[in-house]
Length: 632
Image (tube, rainbow, N blue to C red; front, side, top):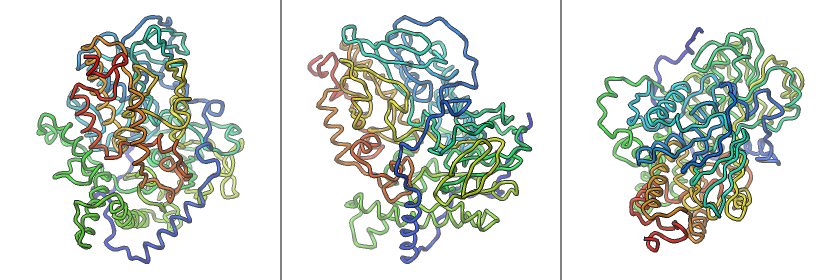
């Protein structure tokens, strides 16, 4: 299969540099422009606008196009520890369990045919991590791996996941191509009853859920989705039988004479549009809201330089990244990417303004940070828009590709080929001025009152994010007395530390919300959770206990902490609609709980939880119904 490179600018700076001056008049104009563009995109149906893939697409969200599923005999045994999901959450936690000596009675249940999670399923061309590989890829030192570049592509990420699994002997514990149906706590036996759609009916003493915040793909609320009679696919279920090629840069030769349409211009589309534009006969990009695309500045990692890194380098780099993302202040910036650049600019401006106004920087607070964010953001986003004019040749297309919102209203995008793709004569931007496509029929897409006939249609329309946990994970969990997790969280997620839920004993939620919530580098949340779970299981064994559960008081206090200190300055109501701000609708208590975080920042959460588990007291947790002090 031929691999064809996508042209990259010869000289790529590390980051997009902010403009020097934005006048007060220009700032006021930006406020008005942002609000006007937001108002165009508000939909009355909010997060309920999206639809499931099943029944609409050939490759739906529960079908595996990559692995042939072979029949097997159902299981009816018992394991001490079950992990639901086979992505980096499972790999990180189970690796820590193995390191702590939990070697035997362990099982990992995964719907896909191998480890990898989101990187197993999302094999669209151009798939790539948007966080630097040196901190994004967990356990690099432990498994002896060197990333090939600052940002690595999907195949390399999947290979790293599989390397972790081999290194820690996790394949022997894996149950692939298996879909959980129900998970039920049996109080009399103090264990979980696990039933799968494949007929398994076994039990587990402890269960951890790591199904991820971006696990279940969905489709836009567009009329006529089911009518399209030609090949269609979601980026999370790419169909290479239709396109040809592969996800490692191979030419998609079956598209060379095809009219291809793609709906969506978010973070995923930014990655796959360059290769679709390169290989399609014609490409039509249907856009409701432009992404702000800054310079990525990718480069290879020099093996000789990498070999000079001291032992423990990744732990040091991750701590540095977390510190910078939380405060913007540290002695060094190891990663030096768009994420850390942003927070350093904000904190630097905040201190600069304080000194100028005679304030003590030590007394600055959240309001001062938000003000500095707005000031620096005006300069930065103006530079991103100016870059669009510099790169894109056609003025009308360049204007259509400009994002009119603050940088963090949507997940920031960094790419070195996306804007250049729109200089290809066969690539057409169909900007809908915030309205989105009108409808879809048997042969194509209607947008701006015009019909676009297509041979292939691609949906780059994202995943369930703001919906309930049970909807995102497509499973139900029944705790003590038959309480369903969907009911327990009916008015919003309620937990202790984001991991423990009252009336759901021996259940560990491995995610990001109500904990560190480090969205910029999700895998760090997982590796830390692995240390916490291993420490708790060790303490349980020492005590001779069988049940781990949060006290009701600890959970209530944690929920109050989340609600009383909730802030959402990055995706507030002034932002254009998206999953960061409940699709532009006001956030009630439910939404604040579902997206809540430890109020003192990611670095403070990791410090707090490390002290908490290392103390051996596990305050707020009951072992067999009693605190450690009483149990001991």
